[in-house]
Length: 457
Ligand code: UD1
Image 1: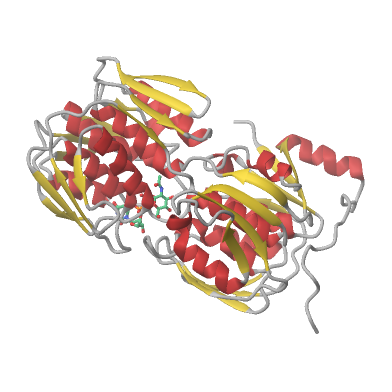
Image 2: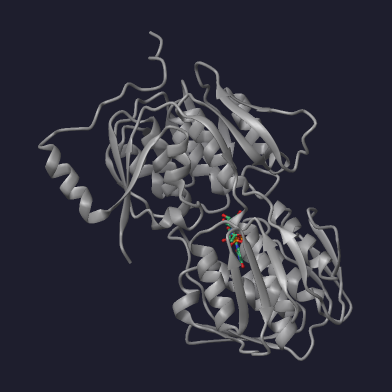
């Protein structure tokens, strides 16, 4: 894999407009729904990045025919009913586990390697398996592979809560499987995330009988078969949140279109407390997708954040908020309750001048610390986004290595940010040394002043 970096010259105030892309975390399970029918499932508003490519490759291996045009993907069964997914494809993406439920429901068997995924902490799949077992599937594990089999799944009442709350992936997986089970399934302790609702919407258009999605109790009446359908993927709430922070951290003013307002209520509450204003441009717009103007008050205030299952604060925005809070005037506290090890960005932010103290799953961020450009290493998707945001606010040049992590969840982020006036370039890693050498020792490109007013006193 060609390693690429972002070279960011910080200090530019962002301005302009961005349309928020379709949600990766909805598109992945939505694509898996295609395994539940022989007809065509058409998805619109699909963003273009590496995880989607991987999922299409996986569906191809499972015998599905895929047609792709910009923003649109059509998946159709070809009559090839392979139930085996290779380690090569699955290891790149944890979301591969989402094929289990649909495969066993439609084909009676799934043979899938245990997935890989992000670098933070343990990410078990026990809830996925518990749910499928409750529907009557037989589960065997050997040599890193999971085999799930059943003649026909049977509806059941299943409690899907885990030690850290509900599971988004397990809820989607079991809900998909239950659509073709015999009889009624009740999922208690279901994840309430908006992506679960988006999956339920597509399944309903395919003929599934589902109620209660978006609440902790989902009821599914099994049907004998599902048909094709088309569906437009919901906008990505994490991408929306990331670009809102890009505007705020540079003290800029940006309009975001297709902003999923309703899905971000907890983050909106925190922004409001910090002093980041997010105002609807047209009061009449739907709260599901609207246009908002993002701008900041002159001084940002600190806050307290605890990540929780939806509608609580999303863990996928924790790292980005941490970058923002380094610029608030005072001490903020972030507690990570979903992935307690998800702090790979802390040490890198510290290298840029942030003052953060971590104790287990709690971080205290002392603001405001002026950030200065540094070479930093991206280690997972959202941590990478955090480092790019910090780079936008930092004085001087930041080099973020390994942006392939970022490409898993943001379509061409450097282009989006550049259109807003940021100075961000994607360069092959080997060129970074050349760039540095060509500038001579100690040289930094155009040191721009921090976009924030100097601290008082
Ligand atoms: C999804 C998102 C991910 C987000 C996460 C939490 C996708 C593709 N990814 O991941 O970006 O960070 O939700 O909002 O949608 N758990 C178990 N057993 C299981 C499954 C999960 O104990 O079988 C635990 C996890 O370790 C974690 C918590 O449950 O502590 C939530 O995980 P889960 O909601 O399953 O995350 P994903 O669906 O994998």
